[in-house]
Image (cartoon, rainbow, N blue to C red; front, side):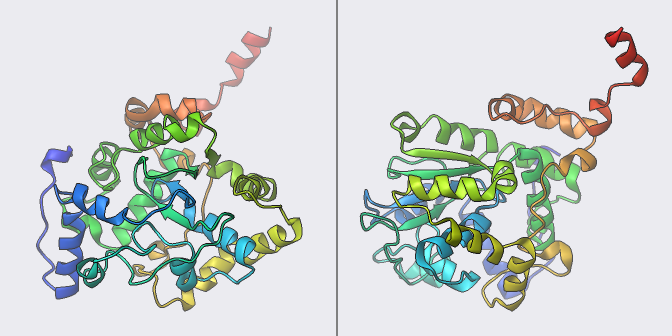
Length: 319
């Protein structure tokens, strides 16, 4: 199904559903630009950003950084206040946005050197961002994670999307997330002025999973702080997938769907797409984002079966 064939699904008429649907759609219309501008008011040059496309592992990074920088145990409640999303950092005259649930009625405290705040954003690069960490994840795992969450939260029922095949092309085309296509999002950050002047630190989620401690040392040093490896190791231990899931279970602010698929904290798999995406789906992803995947050092869009070299051919080439 192409993006132009998306149609509203009005089968659910409950008030919470209607409000959520209206909010979801408002952020995907011409209201998007003025709302984004409003959410970026009252930033300072000392603020540092954690940028990412949705479902790239940013919460895991934020939980660890909160404990490293503040010494406080991270929870879904205090992460919203101490490392908030952009807009929740404290903007003036935004009562209407608070009522709609688009922002929190609070102001984030400074927790980085120089009196800056650490703020999370899923937005494309904007000139208001003066220093940032950009977390990127393989698009193929992002797509699978995004589909599972949207399905669990019943967001896909806003449109006539019934399975992953009908979801994939609108997602790749930037019609599902309000932040545009993944490859455009990544390109905007990689080619930003921050990258040119040394104020952008790019981290792959897969590398962070494999070499967590050393990469967190790099992040802390990028923020202008000395790295305490004992504190970093403790933050890692406190925020394993299982421990974050336990925090999710007691949280009163996490929005999740029913069952295992409805969890906000998923398994954070690396390369799970190899067993789950078929050749046709991979070919489609490659057409949209193959160049960017290659630029970031990710493997080509081939399934595990396609990557396996038949023994006969291997012997012939070796001989």
